[in-house]
Amino acid sequence: MGTNRAPLGAVPLAILEFAGRAAPFGFFRLWRRWEPVAMWLWRVRPVRPGAVLQFGISPYRGHTTQLRDRTVVRRGDRILHLHLDNGVVAALAGQPGSNPWSLIDQAGRDLDALAELVACGEVGEVRAVRGVTVLARAAARLGFEVRPLPRNLRWSLIRTLSALVLASYHRGGAKELERGVAWPGEVWLSSQALERRLNAGRRPGSGGEPDLSAAR
Image (cartoon, rainbow, N blue to C red):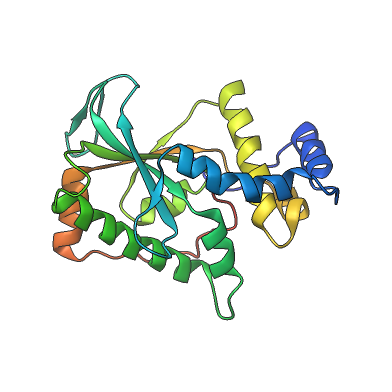
């Protein structure tokens, strides 16, 4: 699956430019105010104080799927839906000395904290962790199974929405996203794999520098 940046196209870029205009009620300003409210309404909470990762719990509504460790997730199974706290990511990225690796390390520690919550039963019985993100390459470094999503209108719209969210927090605004945004990917981690990660004390792997400037 290709997770590198790809051009957004003329229409999404025009939408970004319009949304980024410095109006008193511009989209970017409104979104920064609305997102915390939306997370509260959706019962999404941080893994721990100051975490870049947030999660919600709900029944799985997709088709039956088997993960790479042979865990089977069926419709109706309780799963954790993972989200990024874009405000925290933006604040950390703006700190002196911050780099993509430090953000991945923070996400890794958050994932360990989530594993603790699952292992101690605080979130009840859950089958797996799932997310949709344009940061699939970074998620793979944290041990997630990454699955490509179809290149259709639905996911194109979600990619454009993700770009709007990113631009609302990025210091460069919409201009930064002129380089493009990766196509969204679906990421999975079974609850057993999450607990194994905790028991093994795993941390992110090494390799080429990841691109964390585009997150969902």
